Every structure is written in structure tokens, then in C-alpha cells.
Image (cartoon, rainbow over the protein chains, first blue to last red):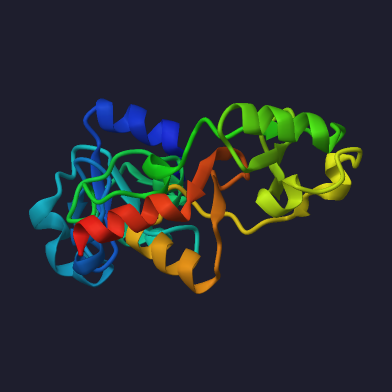
Length: 67
Length: 160
């Protein structure tokens, strides 16, 4: 079960080498994304997650807000 | 969207998946830096005047007016001890009867904007709604500063 984290938790995890992933459409990523995040839109996860992410490291996903 | 992504990653064999559920909105609202094409564009949070005078609900208008004018201001923001915005005093309200309490003299519940709003978007909003000034607050209502229309107009002129 995925674990919810807040902003401070995210910063600690990223410092500890977690992979940060924005799952919004690529156009939104291009305008603004969190420092160091990579773009992996929700619709591309099935096809690309295993290619662009390391399964041995933690992954943090985010979108725009809680909705 | 991110919960679905997180669950899908787990189903694909990722064993340590976290969801920053408050998302990019929370990050931007905190005024934190971003990367991307908008990263270096001016935003409300950086343009807002942080030195705007503030006052409490129980003060008399004359005292607040004197304080604001002595610092070259024709506006003040009404806040509580936590700097949560309750009201706004623009030039019109400041010019009222000096004996009135701020709670009676202020414009209550002014529209506020978040620090991440781009300056050119702020300019359009302020012109369209004829706002000479607008408080910029965090998402939990705390004052960041006061945005003046003349400041965003300068940015618009530069980028035009």
C-alpha cells in the first residue's frame, strides 16, 4: 500500500536518494515541476515505468493536488 | 491522479512507493522553487510588498492611518497574531472617521491570491476587477505581502 507523505517527508526522502516522479501530462511538467523530478504521465506508467525508474529505490509520485 | 499512479507502480513490482498527495499546488503555495519554463517568470510572492503595514482588529483607525502614512503607505492589512488576513484598508477606508475601530472600518474578507500566481496573470486579474492592491497569502491564509497594481503593471510593460 503506498504511503502518503507531506512536503517535509518528500524533502527527506529525496535527500536520501528517492526518485521523484510527476505523473501529470508532459505539458504541465514542462511549465513547472519540483526540482529533480522526472516526467512520467499516468498514461505512460504501464509502458515506461520499468524503463525509467529503478525498482530498488523508493519512488515518490505527485500530481497537482489531492483531487 | 497520484494515488492511481502509486498503486499502479506497486502492482508493477515497485516495493517502496510514496504519494505526495498535496502535490505541486502545496509546493508552489509554500513559495518553493521549481524547474521548468515558468521557473524564472516573476510571481506574486516575489513581487508582493513584504513591508506593508499591518494592524489588529481592536486598534483605532487614526493610529493605523498615522502609522501607515508615516511609512509612505496608503494601505494596511488587518491580521491576527498568526498573521492570518482578516481585512484590508485601502486609501478609501483609511480616510474614514479616525475614532472607528479597525473591525468596523476595514474591508472584510478581501480576495487573496497565492504566491505562485504568475505576475502577468495577476496583472490581468487586478485590472479586470479594478483592484489597486491585493493581499498575497499562503494557502492557510497567512500574509506574505501586499501586491500593488502599479508593481505588476511594471512587469507587464517590461515583458510586452
